[in-house]
Length: 101
Image 1 (cartoon, helix red, strand yellow):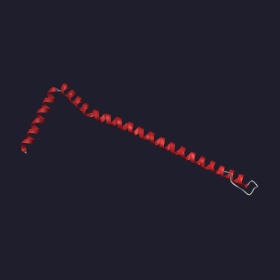
Image 2 (tube, rainbow, N blue to C red):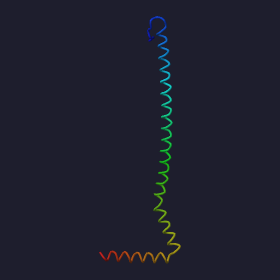
Image 3 (spheres, one colour):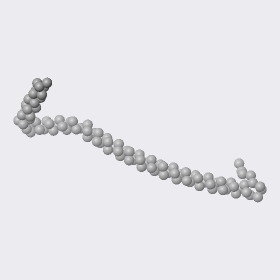
Image 4 (cartoon, one colour):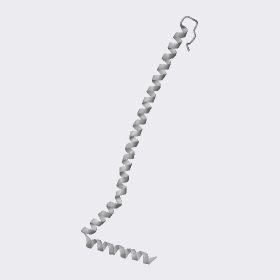
């Protein structure tokens, strides 16, 4: 659809001006979309890094009880007499606490 003018080429000038305006607006929109995509990509990367760090921390926490049990076993193997004394003392204290109630 061609813009109508008064016959002296005004319609063509208006169409060219509209095309230029549309091109400028389109370029600005493309720039805004590109910037938004860059920001979103950066945010997604930071979130991915946080998720990886949390996953690693979760794995460490899941292994913690196993590490404590293994450390206890190692202590008992290396110090059997001290381990027996600690167990007897803990049992005695526990029985005193339970008896007082």
